[in-house]
Image 1 (cartoon, helix red, strand yellow):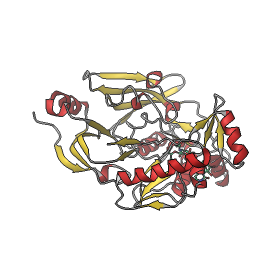
Image 2 (image 1 turned 90 degrees about the vertical axis):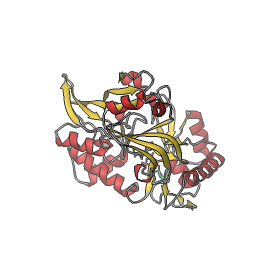
Image 3 (image 1 turned 90 degrees about the horizontal axis):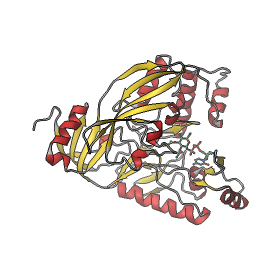
Image 4 (image 1 turned 30 degrees about the vertical axis):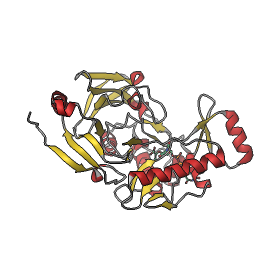
Length: 343
Ligand code: EPU
């Protein structure tokens, strides 16, 4: 069978993951249309291979060489696809860069995604971990998506409830893992927009810039400024954003921890539980700015693990294990790894 796009064998994935891990893929296929997925499925050799779907490569850790087929999503396109009384619908193809897409919506006078500015990665990956930052998450503006079902070869449409979004979570990390390849996402952007300044640090930044009635563009600029100050630019220092989720504990567990650690940082959740700032827990254990081999903890945000140059995925995991152990010992709280581990 001949492919519209070339299939590459034994390719380094170093430039395709923001951690900059130099692992190899047995095969790499650039997917710029659903036809490439159909062709892949029709080829018995390729269809039988283990698969990894790769978007911007910004939320995964390659722990070793990948002995399967990497599908690199590269389909592009953004369009306004409809409206109702409350919303404008915008559809973006999976291979679009997330931040580029957010900027496109703002440039077209369509607010709603500004708090999610500068998050690395692709549009197609954004629903998988329901990306979130500064008091907002992708699910807030999500309408539906289309995914290629590798089992049936059909396109399926999933609405918000089918996606089962949670905190850095969705059905694509569970029931549809390894089965659905997201090919496009439709967002419902509000016609009656209101600034979301619930996140204290963002409100402070906006106020410091003297903005009384900030526009969505102003908020985007403030988010970009905060992120640039605190989070490492993957183009300079390999990383995958927050390496752990913020752990959720019961009100009783929080009380007990507060009694011992009065400066504990926690946020009440709608269901009465509390989210703890994992960055604070790790920081308290003394890990901020430290390294283990070529893997390190970012100087300005302890929740972010970094590649100081030539780190292997195994080295990053060793560092993560040490951190998990120390946080467990000091606080009795188990940290969960946030990015997808690929082995
Ligand atoms: N903190 C410390 N030391 C640190 C880091 C944080 O004491 O080294 C304290 C801060 O002072 C603050 C609190 O922890 O009081 C929270 O820190 P921050 O505002 O930086 O947010 P976060 O909870 O650490 C989460 C998301 C980020 C998102 C920010 C802003 C997760 C796992 N992480 O981090 O998302 O940008 O909030 O909304 O929920 C990502 O998922 O990759 C990511 C970067």
